[in-house]
Image (cartoon, rainbow, N blue to C red; front, side, top):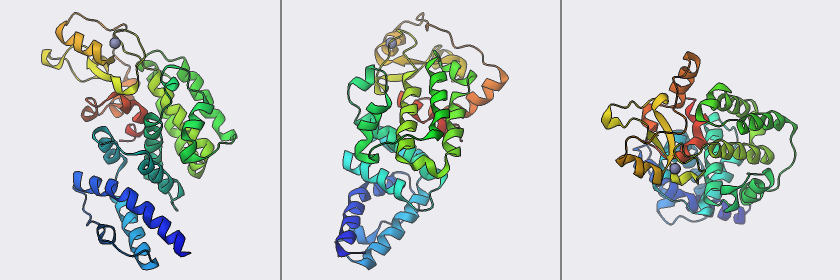
Length: 296
Ligand SMILES: [Zn+2]
């Protein structure tokens, strides 16, 4: 490696180090801080070797759930996100955990850098591609993505959260990602799967006023409030925009457009996996990552 390459990689490492450090401290991960990055170490091969080992070890301790949780409270700047994505895409011997992280980080990157028209309009592949161009480069056609397009068309016909279960959209998306193997990390696949994630989110509208909202403005709402014995269950939870949520707090008679119905046994099993109780209070943006949650 040339000395300029060593310097460049160490600069990138210093850029993302605060992100890793925060994760390790916040979640009490059993890792010591990286001495070389805490102090002013010189840019040389030995330092780089130690730094790489440290990041490799840290990646094993960090779960996508940690990153997701941090993303809800902290803001990452664009260069940090970009380097994080590069790092995971370029990694040798990528694991399933790396795929989940890339999946999350790309969705997050797009949400942070989304051109305003993407919030209201149809999310075309070229728009997603141009928004992601700084991280994944230019796209090319891949035949393995045809099944994903089919899944997207079915998704387009879903009008309610329950439809997703009936059509097994989340599971199919998850299987497609897993089956793509190394191809998942191809730039065209990264763009297509990120678009799929955005579509998942955009299918959902506030179930009280029926309007579509940016992800950050949507929440889960208990139709029968918890304070009145309402359960945190598939049959009692709908999407709601913040204004409707506030209004509904004071007016219990407010009813969703479609009452969430009792799912079939099959749907219930899927719902249980898609909806662990601890995740229900989290923001609507989590719909982007449902396929990850199905894993748990
Ligand atoms: Zn609303």
